[in-house]
Amino acid sequence: MTHIEQYRNGDRETDIIRIMIVEDHPLFGQGLRRVLEGEDDLRVIAEVEDGAYAVEKALEVQPDVILMDINLPSKNGLQATREIKNNALGSAIGVIILTAYHDDEQLFHALRAGAAAYYPKDVLPSELIPAVRAVAQNNYVIGEDVMNRPQVARWMIRQFEDLAIFGESPDEMFVPLSPREMEILQYITRGASNKEIAHDLGISRQTVKNHMSSILRKLAVNDRTQAAVLALRRGWVRLEDTAAMH
Image (cartoon, rainbow, N blue to C red):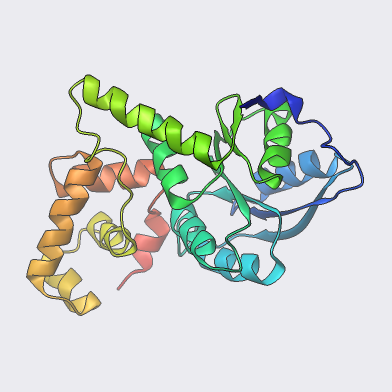
C-alpha cells in the first residue's frame, strides 16, 4: 500500500494520461479542466454532460481516466460507471467518482459500481491530481492510501467484518441497486404507483413490489418517500429527469 502523496509525475514524465470529464455543470467542468491541464502529463480529451452519452463516448475514445459526476442527466454516474466497466472496451478505464454527497455508504456504492476512487466535489487539486495518476496506473485510492485490487478486496471485507461486530448486517449493507431497481427508483421519486410502474416497464405489479422490497432493504429505509428523498440527496435521481418521465 502506497501513500497518495507519492504520486507526482509517475515514473516516466513523457507518459500522457488521457482524461474524460463527465460533468453537467459548466463552471465546475471548466474548473476541472483548468486544474488538470495545468499539469504536463495530464490531457483532457473529452468532456461530456450526459450519463448515457458518457458510456458511448468512453467506449469510443477509451480514456485512461474518467472523472465522473454522480448527478447526471439520463443516467447517473454509478450506472454509467457500471456499464463502462462491464464492457470489454471499458474494463481498463479508471473511474474517479466526484459527488456533492459524501458518506461511507456512497463510497461502497461507487466501489461496487467499478470506480477506482471517490471524492467530494470540494476535493483539493493537490489531492485529486495524485489520485488521477495513481488510478491511471490501475490502482485504487481510498482516503490517502493507494491500493491494488487484492488490497481493496481485503479492505472491503474488513469493513463488512467491522459492521458485523457492531451488530449491523453486512449482507444487507452497501449492496448496490440493480439497473432495474435504479430505474424503479426514478419512478418512485416522481410519485408513480406500482400499477403505473408495472405498465410503463411491462412487468407485473408483483414484480414491482418485489423490487420495492429489495430497494427499501438495501437503502435501509422504511417507505417509498424515504427512498425517494435519499435518492435525490445522493444525486442518483434528478428532479429534471423525473419530471420528464411520462
